[in-house]
Image (cartoon, rainbow over all chains, first blue to last red):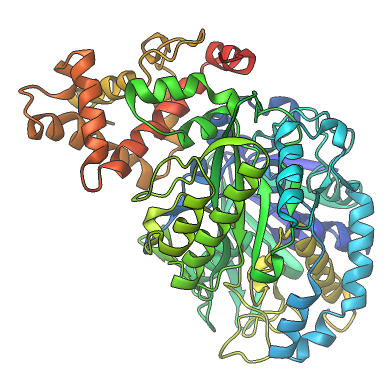
Length: 500
Length: 125
């Protein structure tokens, strides 16, 4: 086990390994674990810092400043500036996500393979299932324990029951969770079984070195072969990493295409086909305190409308984000803050149709993305259902957070009006983006895909992509387990003798 | 780094956004923001930093005059500041302006350990 902190690297550094893995999120950790288990030496290089759980801050601002990319305030540009949220630390987003685990949905898998039958062989369903079983066991994926759920989660169950919608405790990768409600700031006790505490730890027990706080700036190619990467440590030193077998990109659906573009590897639709799960939230006020910041951060979900592309979740915001969601300004806003304990926030993630693009413009990351009219209709539908569930659970009133519409609604009838005649423009909605896909799509045709079905780049040998950027479409569910399973398959491809 | 007049406006805007919550929570004026701003400048993405500066100049410097006041935001009394914020929210596009101020105010306010402790223990009436 070896960790090199880039903040202390002030002189030139050169290292070599069988695999150079760029990114230490669920995909990078999965690749490292599998390759190391098969006897390869691995270097995992991560732009963000290595942070021990005991050092995770309590306040949202401090957590976002230290652990999130762009303080959690990076936005897509398009019809509306919608924030997209990514972790920037060893573990990627997994230390600061809601710990929600979903298996790869069969219907999505079939869509992929129907569009490109080569994927049936490249991603065998039975192998994905077997890998998922093993990953769920390693990450201790279990339904949320009602003892730590807290009122916010139990109220969603009550509301869904009243509407006859299928719901369930969220299956999460936690062990001995005490319901601190701090998943989004990082669990200070390490109860969350995030990628770096599990998969990366397994890899580091073998021949894996982690370089944190080192930004990879270029993929080094000789002819059609990727030999390594060049980077810059936060301490100022240049870093050169040589790959004896493969360079594996696992830096996310935003950072991976950017690295390709900055390296001059523009083959195929790199950066295009950006897909995600935009979501909107509904706040509800209850007569009794619900203390949203207590209990399992995200412990309950409604899956009864998944066939419509809608999945509802309890949101786990801390005080800061909940307060910013409350209405009013000045004295009125201050009074709202004093009643925060009575408010909770639920969200709906939409399996959106829109496609966007990731680009680098003058060195800055630009993601353009505009929800379609159909996606916005889904926002309205989701808000209506969430509001109805909240009223059924006992909410006194609800705040849909839709600009140009009533800020607070006191009866379900107004929700029908919101669904039918709510604003058409994306900018009217309090939305956020999580789960990004598709910017280095996998497929047989090099004209329409960036990597081959075996994860290899279409133009560059020994360059592989393992993260969700290879997913042909979004999933409609939280993707971390599916990403881990697919990335493990990628590592197996790389380790096959034929690949060498 | 912001100019001195921007600093005055942004402090006044944050103070006015959370004046007196009650329920044991302190006003924003009681929150020490000296360490907050350098961390904000370092961590926030350029679009947020730029956006906040523009919002600060608009709501701190331009809107008060448009609404008939003869001073910038930091020169107004508490009642006038509250009035400017409320009326700004009703202007076309104004909701987005105050939302940015509100978000930054919440970052600063709840970053204070004292506020965190009180808020987490608060049982509203």
